[in-house]
Image (cartoon, rainbow, N blue to C red):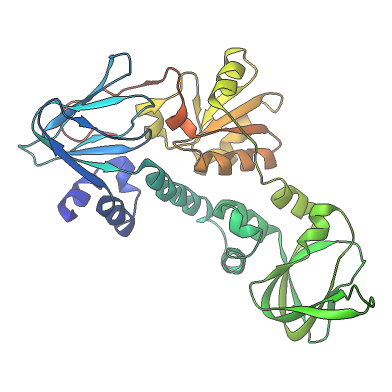
Length: 354
């Protein structure tokens, strides 16, 4: 697998993936072999690497979509970068292939996009991210979303015994304990007296329930050990956290909206992924370029964002909403798109030059 990985690193798509992640993809890939005419099982969005031999891909109607062959003379594998929904893969001669899980690949590429987007952050924001990444509700968010929250937070040094929030008080902020320890006190339903119900250590968050509900505090939180808190103001909480649950829509609804010119399609994958396999009429704006290029989009229009399987597009739609745009996610990404698509699937032998 080492030699295969080194050859794949020469392609633009796999060149972005770290050596360990690429090795993991290949180790967990499904290996298949067979004679001419044998079918290869692959799911939408999977990537198929032809180690030797060749294969062709046809639509469910029998239309030729792609033909990929390994270059035996150069020792180069062939790579089929995209498997549309309903496609049939058939070996053209005695062949050996690897089928890479497209969902796992999308996870890896999503992480790459996120790393690119936070590369310019200063050290203080990076340290806050480390405190937030395993804290609710941040653990449900993408890394890029967490970075936006970290950038909006303020750091507050606190002493032992200091009361941070008070029972029945109004919610003004969400807090994460960066250092120190806090106790949570709630009224005993039997006598109404405050009783200690929990101890929170570094990394724990509190205060989000009142903000999400729009009600009063349901507990008192008091520092039992001195330390430091990260605080996110209620307005930032509403904008960055409460709104991060992005809506998605089915391919049928998306197709109808686009056909009626009620929405425009945005492809947030890398540009070379867009060149190879895309939904007709979609505009390519890679996730890591979205902040700057979204300024060119019309705020009066609605946008449907897609990627390979839907993970990157959730981060993209969230970011677009923060920029004042109306954006929803194409459920399942291009992998679940049952309609026409464009691209350049027919390639010569060897690794496609993407």
